Length: 217
Length: 269
Image 1 (tube, each protein chain N blue to C red):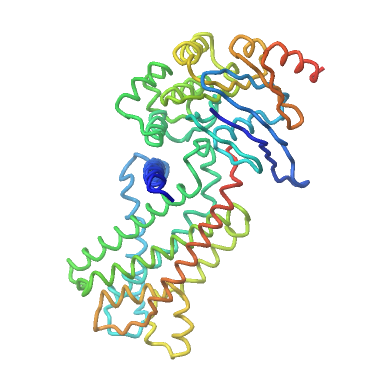
Image 2 (cartoon, rainbow over the protein chains, first blue to last red; image 1 turned 45 degrees about the horizontal axis):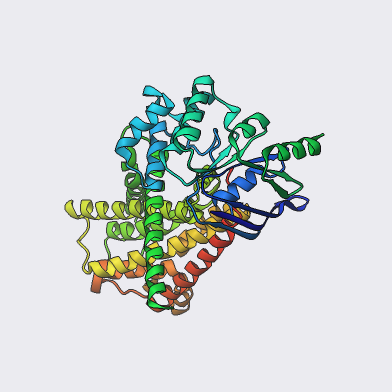
C-alpha cells in the first residue's frame, strides 16, 4: 500500500512560493490501477515524483509499504553521452540486478541491436523511448508509476508496452498519468482528478471522466 | 528500545548501507566514463593529471631554486607539498555545481546528492593518492627522494587533508546549489589559499606570531604532519592534531547539515 496523507508541495518562484499540491490524500492498494487526470500544469508529474520518492513533500507524509518504481516517462533519466548499455549497467548497479542477463533482456524489448553500444545522444526519440521502457521493465516493482505512456512510439512498440505492463504485470499496482481519456478508461479500475492542488478520487472511472470534462469545459 | 527493535534497526541500517554502497559505486563507474571516456588511456588520467601538475611544480621550483628555507631536498619538498594541495583543493572544485548535471539521475529514489558528492570525492582522493605514491616511488627509484621515515605519520597527515578536503567540498557543493556566489568566489579563494596552504614553505621558518596564525589553517597542519612523517628528525614540524581534527569534525557536521537542507529542495528535471 501507498498512503498519501495531506501532502503539500510548493516551489519557490520569483514571485514567492507557489503551491502545486495543497493537501492531497490517496491510498493505493496492491494490484489496483489508478488513473490520474489533470490539465497541463495541474501537478500530475509533481504528484508522481512525490509518490516515487524522488522528491520530498513540503508538508504531510508519503508512506510506501510496497516497492515503487521510478516515474516511467519516455524521455529523461538518461546520461546521453553514455551508451545505452552504460545506462543499463547503471540501473543494474543501483537496483542490484544481474548485469549478465540484462543485455539480452533489454535487447529483446528495446530492439536496439548494435545501437545499444552507441551513445544515447545519437538515438531517435523512438529509440530512447524503447530503451527507457526496457530499462524500467528490468526491475520488478509492486507499483509502477507511468507518466504519459502513449505519447510516443509506433504500433509495434505500443503493443509491446501493453503486453509487458497489462498482461505480464497485471497483478501490480499502477498509477497512470495521461491526457488520453480512452487509455485511462481501458486500463484503470479507478480514477482521480487533480485540479487546483486538490485530488478528487472516484471509484468509478466514468464519473471521474465526467467531472474532468466539466472542469475542462 | 527492546532487543527486537534494536535487531530491526540493525537490519535497516545494514540494508541502507548496502544501498548506498551500490549507488555510490554506480555513480563512480559512471563518472569515470563521462570524465575520461573509453578512448586512449582512459581512467589513467585520474592520476596522470595530478602527476603532471606536481612534476611541473617540482621542475619549476628546482629551476628557480625557490627558497623554502630548510635542508630538505627540493624534489621531496615539492612532491609532499604540491600533492597535498591537489588533494584537498581539487575536492571542492569537483563537488561545486555537481548536482544540476546529475538531476536526471535523481529520478531514482536512492540516488541522492550526498551520493554524487561521495562518488566524486572518492575518485578525487584516489587520483591524488595514486599520483603521490607513484611519484614518490618514481623519484625514489631515480634517487631524488628518500623513502618516508614514518609511513603511519604520512598516512595520518594525508588522511586529515583528505578529511578536510571532503568536508569543505560537501559544504561548498551543497551551498553552490543554493547560491551562485559560491562557484564564482571559490576560484579566486582556491588560488589565494595556495600561499597559505603550507605547500611552498616550512612553518618553522616563520616568526612565532606567523606560525600561530598559519596553524589556524587545517591544511597547513596536515602538510606539516605529512612532512614530519616523510622527513622525520630532519624536519621541525609544527602542528596541532587536536585542533585540526576538531576543525574537520565541525566542518563535516556543517557540510552534512547544508547537504540535508539542499537535498530537500532538489527537483529532478
